[in-house]
Length: 365
Image (cartoon, rainbow, N blue to C red; front, top):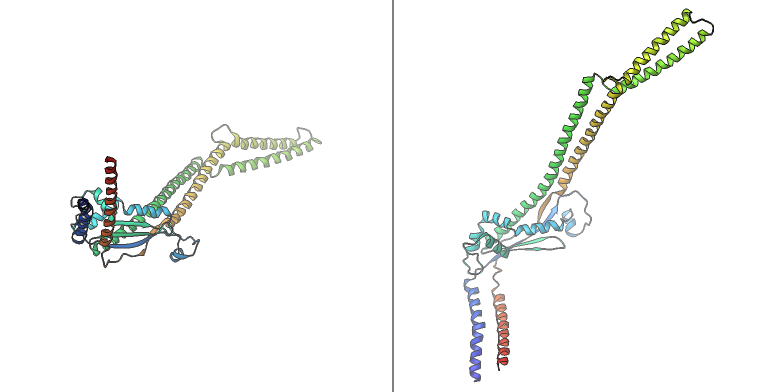
């Protein structure tokens, strides 16, 4: 009876442990194809003239502040994205390279869809981000050392182009907006100046405000003159009659000055359209528009120069800390590690199965 139990146990152990382990070892030693790995270390840095806040370590070596965490995470996501896979498939023919080994498990199937290609790509391309230094380690696997190196180099090239594109696009958008504002403010300034010139030419006047001041000054002088003449008239009347020639001549002169004052005053407040007070108001409004357009033009010009400066500061570049190298030996599959791990896992699963079987049998009895 004991021999029968031992035989059943041996058969079960062989079926669930030894035979699967034998299949795994046969696959690893016979069918599994060697996979080579090439790796590189990247860093996204910002091109800036700003001072370095902490001149220690890598920051001091590069001479610029480290990039933000956002930049590194964006690049990490882009490297494993479908866009990257499609570009590399077009340039390197990934489907052919990942299927060339005919590995039944680790190779890509021949008629793989784009979704399957992306999934497989994320298995053979690994991105490790150091949250402290924001450096990215990019590892790429291939069934030949040449292809793993070529794949890693292509990843660096596409990543560099991506970083350049997004930084330049942001800079160009800001600069383009500033240039558009400058063009609009220039047109507005020209229109305001032309309107002012047309008004001056139409009314045949250079500056109605100056003219109004001149008229006011003239009126003031005439009023002073007439005051002097009336004083002289009163003096003459103290010893001459109204019919005296001197008095009559002086009164005639006073009357002429008073008419001139009325004429000059009418220029300032006449009910006609040519009155100076209305011209002054209109002219001041046009001058204010020209002044506002000039200030807006200066502001737009300053904004453009600032946008150009900011654009140069926001440019980013990809720094290759460690360049990819040609692998000399295959790192995958790790045959001994996989064999030992498989043996341990199969034994654990077998032990769990035997434990469940014993519990079920005891409950039946």
